[in-house]
Length: 125
Image (cartoon, rainbow, N blue to C red):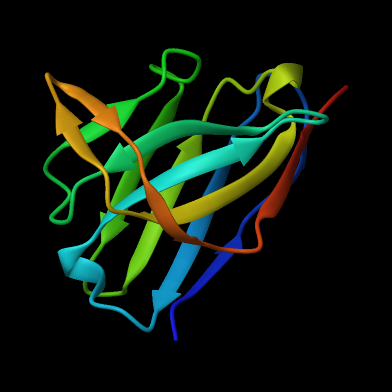
């Protein structure tokens, strides 16, 4: 059974930082691309970032490029997202997702087949 368990969310002031983690099990982690997505209040899922199976290639949405960093530790079956320079509009539920999409013309086209329960990030003063 595929399990993805996010952690590390919380409340932070604008300009602050958080590091999210996603512990994975039930599939061969080092064979799978992974993504982070978020659900903004009252809106649908927004893809933010992806990393390929070995962690060599990363992709970001324009809204988070330069502020968020995706990484993975295949020895620990764990995916990470470092969130810096947080803004109030980053307030959302953040999910990690097992991604069967791919890179096309240098851009990531996501296709999720599993995702976790999410961790809430709230940015406010």
